Image 1 (tube, rainbow, N blue to C red):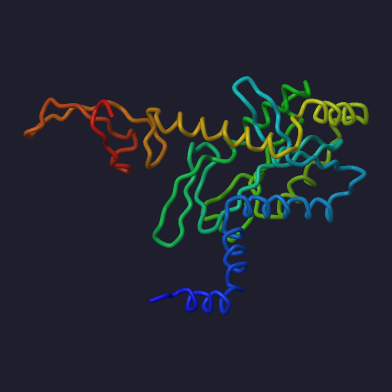
Image 2 (image 1 turned 180 degrees about the vertical axis):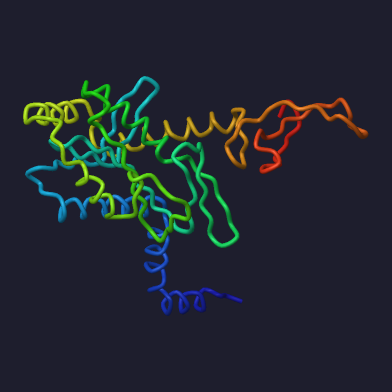
Length: 259
């Protein structure tokens, strides 16, 4: 039996679903979520920060010793330089400034992710080296966008959406003069890699290589803590060795020695 006419009729009736499915796929993609997060920061800066005082530079990729680092936003003003990292996440967020990993909880599903302050520290140091400015005038800011809720007290430089504006404006002592501001803008302009698809693709490749290297390192895949060598003290496996998480008993991850 030839099903071609039937399939053609179905396609003719439901063709409009194809663009809807494509749009849904794009909306759910990490790329779109990241773009939306950055758009929120851009719009907030445009409407709530005086452009004569605060200079916004977006999507800056800087070369570093081991590859590149990508900064979502840099705001330059006489009150200091603000390095902004955006995180588009939902659910409950648990974290502390000194913790290596933070926790995202969505219903019963729990995920560990790198402390964004640690992530942004690399950006801050790269910018500090480029601008030759004292670290005291460069401020790290993390902005969470999306349907997320902080369930633990957060440092004042970790905010929700447009809340970062309040933190930026809280710095009201002049630390840079007009010449320093102009020099910083020019150094970023000349020191950044071109804002292009090629630059983004190369940076993503670099990040993936770092992730792969960390995956093969001596880190617990469940919580990110260090794995240490332990020896079974009793039972049929007494004397055999395995690797266990240093956070035991809070984390009970183990793996056979040598894996």
